[in-house]
Length: 403
Length: 91
Image (cartoon, rainbow over all chains, first blue to last red):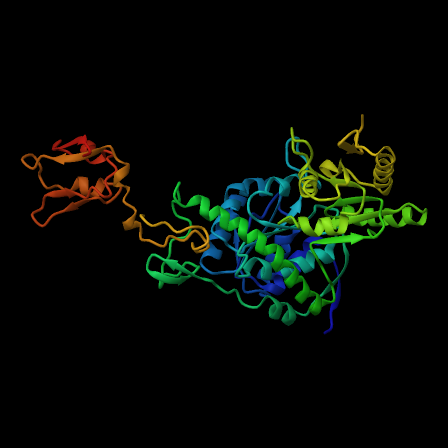
């Protein structure tokens, strides 16, 4: 199969893949903090290149509400947002996952106000980490393109039925043009196929899990002390299933595209003595630093986490478990907590494990501050110090902060 | 809902497997309307105002409350133009 090389920034890669998928409904708030994604997509609509119903709504709350209505009616529904836009959707994110709607949403990671900032960090999507959405983090535009094809198959899988956020760094990825290999339209259409529906027991008997006047059901009505708990445990089970389903979709996508993804992407970890673990575009910078350090004889490695929810704890331990010192880098804060979200998850995952690495947390890049190779190198130097001392003196570290 | 399914046998999607008619919200209430048919003019306003649709119009034109769904809110008594409805303690 012939793939086409295109010059696309992350936003355009998301829009282009979504054009090829051609979802039934795209609902989005069209101005700030929106990105180029829906601007491009609205051009596809205007040019008749998609059959999607484009709904330009008055807020992100309405954007996701529209997608919820559309997806409940059986449509493929897509939206995109960023920063405070995601914050305004917050109420609806729980409704989308609670009634098990396989919506796909691009989240261009940008800082939350106040103070006002439009640049990259992960405070937006980390705030939604408990909303029951699958979260996939991308390192570059190619990953953005691929995730926007794969996500539908993950979301709509009958054992999963959960909405998916595809997270990628604002500006660093969203506005930076890169080479992106794209599949032919028919291959994307063939891969995503048609949305299927599971059968459920409604009040009139067996029905498909969608709103159909010919076979009516009630989705997510009042659910008090008697059933709410059970339905929430369903969502936990769905996340466990997603851990198993995502690799099968990755495998099938790899066979189609030649690009192989997994929950975690280790790099030079076999004999690593110090390793950095993190998400998103900073991992590209980290990889370059690992190569430099290896050239100098330092046994450095790194692990890029692609799936954050569900957290692939077993995979993480498999690839990072032998490294004696780990630095978790992330672009978010959990005010008043022991550390930032990824750090806490990694520590919790290792708590019951046989080998427990020394783990330190490095927060960097808040509000879009650049993370340079020198900064990453500084983190590795700190990790080497921890290794020599055999203990972590300071768990929370701020990289690139003026004292 | 007497026999409740556990999470393993419940269907996904928080779909109600019983009709809302089986959810007898009347047991939330502490009061119920008592109609004085001497004063009632059969105007049916209480029937239309009832937020639960629990007041029906009988064949003889008088109103009757379905206690399985009456939450005892008292809107009917408040709106009755001839004040023929009194809210009394639910039995």
